[in-house]
Amino acid sequence: MSHNHNHNHEAQENIRTAFLLNFTFTILEIIGGLWTNSMAILSDALHDLGDSLSLGIAWYLERYAEKGPDEKFSFGYARFSLLGALVNSLILISGSTVILMRSIPRIFKPERVNPTGMLIFAVLGILINGVAVLRLKKGTSLNERVVSWHLMEDVLGWAVIFIVSIVLMFIDLPILDPILSVLITIYVLYNVMKNLKEILNVFLQGVPKNLSISAVQQEIINKTKVKSVHHTHIWSLEGEKNLLSTHIVVGKEIERKDVIKIKHKIRELMKEKGIDHVTIEIDFEGEECEEENCY
Image (cartoon, rainbow, N blue to C red; front, side):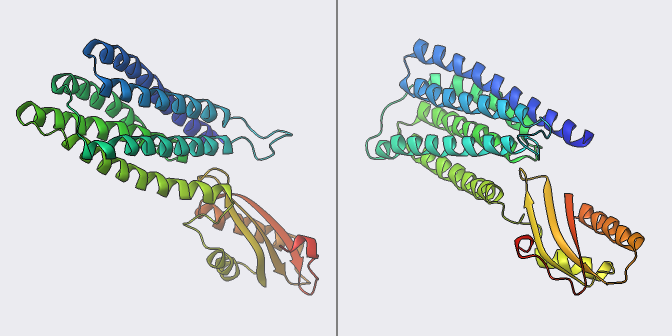
């Protein structure tokens, strides 16, 4: 429990830092956009304001996820972190779609930009968002990973603006900006969709990708004295904490102490596989499994 609490607190701090950095830079962008009269910078400020909103939601839900089990949520509130990841994924997909809708027409009708103003804010954007990405880089929760893609999108976007601004200082080729923006947005969307697939798998209580029900059942049979294993379910609360429930069949004459040993052994085996919560139903050989408990 202490390890989980420390991890959740670290995740919360990482997202809080990302939120504060992103929100501060959004204010700077608005001021800079008005000062340079650059619609491109003001448009990106609007995009970053949306990012700040999603980061704020992620921060709040990560804090909420620290709450322990109670009468309303018997497994605790860990899935609220997953909800934050889902909300952020949808916002990022929406934002990327808007960027594509704005960038693709500019390929056919390029618009002139202010290279000097672009360069100044590109440097600031890379530094500020880069710090936040590094802070979230080692995060393991789905929420942290999705938030890091929010910020990585910004870092890549500002890197493009940095390169394009330098080129445009020497060559009048404004089409570079929309072409690179489209390529980066497609790259970001590809990674977000991969994360979204994993998020939905957790929400729909799919078996974690690194675990196999048949392999788990076979290992229990091979390493304990059970006759058979059936009706095994494996799922995850939020992409990190895995749970398992299963029925094991033991011999009719088995003693109580041996049943206890078998349960302890199964829990040890599952802990090695990263399964924290294990529920074991004991069936005796020849006993008919009640239909409502056999799903």
